[in-house]
Image 1: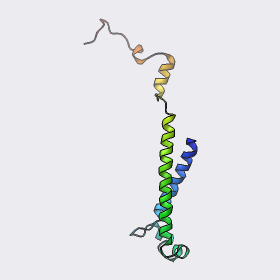
Image 2 (image 1 turned 135 degrees about the vertical axis):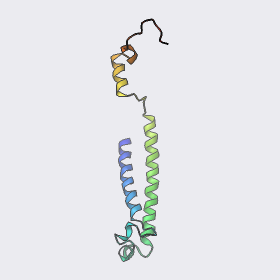
Image 3 (image 1 turned 180 degrees about the vertical axis):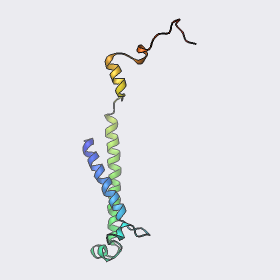
Length: 111
């Protein structure tokens, strides 16, 4: 389930970046390169249609992004185990600790 949500999350992230870049800002943005600022996109969506369409798509992709983020976090928290490093796992498997390998100090205490 987490893998499926992760795939959906990545796709939503990519689509969200694309829709944000396509929106026109005061400087024109990338939408001007693809005809969003001129008659190309305006002819399809109407005068203000392209901007409102992209705004709605961005809103819903943002909501989906948030929901998938929270869902992945909640599902991952339930399956999280005590994580140990590879060195700790090898030492636990062998039954030795790094302090067992060190030589003993003659006299008993170190000052």
